[in-house]
Image 1 (spheres, rainbow, N blue to C red):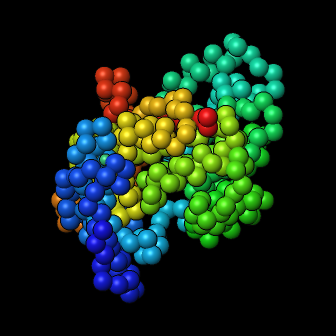
Image 2: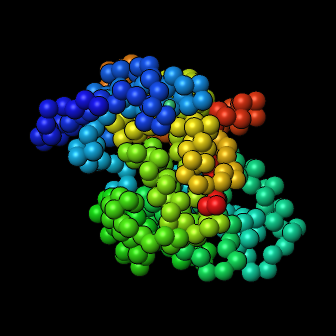
Image 3: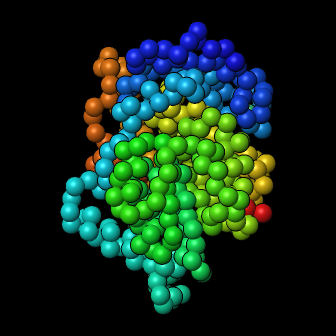
Length: 359
Ligand SMILES: [Zn+2]
């Protein structure tokens, strides 16, 4: 590993070069050069390489921020913002209808209702397919976790402002958060939810502390993802569930937009997984993979942003400022096409969803 001479001053981010694949140690080929952060404006020019091993094919940021400098890449990052993701924009009627339907889906399809009905569960599972983003948009709002049979502890790693934790608490989980951003900590604490600051491995949670761990768009940000998953396995109870959501290196959007693909997000995404290497990593960490697939839930956003990144780059604009919307002709067209395409190529969804159980 080669380093820049010393930690850099002000907003300049000191870097290191990672020559071999951080997962399997194989050599790689330079895939993208001269990458810039055109979404959150962190400084620097970055590189991405691709692992040559056919069993791995990891994409990794081969010129990346040094760990001591990485906080500079997060100074205007989205977790500082309040509120959850606004899939359905500001249309109050649509939002209310959606929230009512989502709550009914969670209650009946995911088992959170007091009285469980096979008929209602089947109805809501089928009806969820009418959502343009598919049933994943609702399943993931309950972290893909069914109702527990007894009191259960849940940790969200990278909890942001805590909007998912608040929902999971209302569904009966005993919740706790972890984030590296002090502003997020204040939001979560203000909702009366315990939350710690920093990296998972610095917390020294006792063995077998949690019944479930959720990491939405986190694992692509961490140094040493193998050590990170081993720590997840250590703090899960036997039979406990780990849910990992992360961008898919083999998605339709990446295939089409290449270096403009939103999922690359240099310099914060240190590695981009595919289904094969992420499930292999879980298995190495004493976790049994029970679900593994790709999702088109956020295709409208990821592909829309990728299209904007491409258009603004070609126009010579330094940063993306154009919003993307699901409820637009382009947004709905991207969702519809992705839904059809993922039927033909099941590994082409924009995100990976992996659910693993501690052995
Ligand atoms: Zn590799």
